[in-house]
Image (cartoon, rainbow, N blue to C red):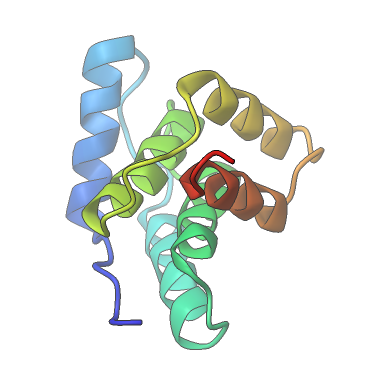
Length: 129
């Protein structure tokens, strides 16, 4: 597999800003190093964990949601970051908005882990049989 297109801090901040513009919430960054760490985790998933696109997307979402690096909209930012990553890398089928919402709530409540989220992305990307 050719190396995927990874996201940088600027993209994550832009996605966060757009989310706040659309849905409201407090702007501000609690800890920028947590965003950097989340981005690094996605790189590690690919380079050291041999993760596929679904695993990388799940890593973005999981770590951004768990880090609580921004004041508001962490789960929204996590979800849209994962979806943008998949889109930039040619994945056109993703879970619907309700599935993503439910998954991010389940992550927050510790009922879903990163591997479970990756499986959700992977299942959605497969053609229906």
